[in-house]
Amino acid sequence: MDNNNLRKISIITPVFNSQKYIGQCIESILAQTYINWEHILVDDYSSDYSEAIIKSYQKKDARIKYYKLEKNSGAGIARNKAIELASGNFIAFLDSDDQWHPEKLKKQIAFMQENRYHFTFTAYEIIDPEGNPIGKTIPSKKRVTYKSALYKNPIGCLTVMYDVGYFGKQYMPSIRKRQDYALWLKLLKMSDAYGLSECLSSYRTGNQSISSNKLKLIRYEWKIYREIEGLSLVKSTFYLFSAILIKLKSYF
Image 1 (tube, rainbow, N blue to C red):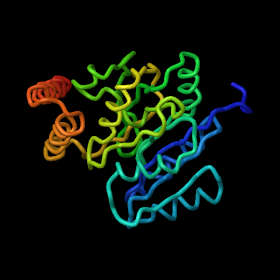
Image 2: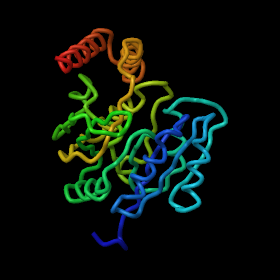
Image 3: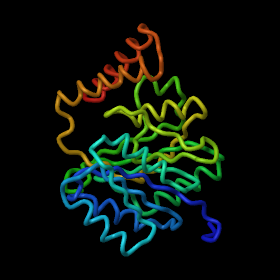
Image 4: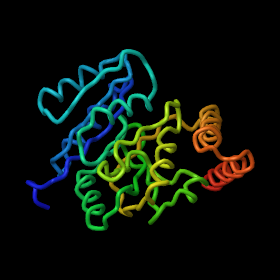
């Protein structure tokens, strides 16, 4: 791939009290073999040293952009601000505690351009809080349609890339949770998504799997079905219970 003709990729990262991992996140982007990118970090009004850490990297590399919100507003609002500021031909997402493998951008954009895909994602691995792989990889489906995605979100946010030239800038709804899933559904109404089977990202787990958080996620999925997608009561109930059953099966 000719470095002089590289399309620009805008990388979207919401930040909130992320001092523990934000350096590793940025380092994984600096290590990319694909060089034409901008990393837009929008700080959701952190109270720790996230700002100082990000600005220390910003001084060394002009591709790193920093913006701080005036109040805590949630990851969706932070991501949307970053999308608004983006100037790239493609939009990609990476949360502040996750990481990319060095070939991620190069391989994914080649996959898109060679196949003329507009919306893609990849497989990814799970790492523990210390960054060690736990031996679990989430595979990518070959193709995802709007209808198939209603059963369960099959797309990891940290792996997504979409073509701004095809979709225009597309934003997430202003909800606190599951806003990425709502955006995928929006994009899938315009184009199917295609998965690159190679594992190119690392998703960090912590203590997110407690029951109260799972119940909150279910409430937000209901909100997506009923309010954002405008599905009937019957269809919303069907898809919600289908999603719950699929998730339960994954534990056994």
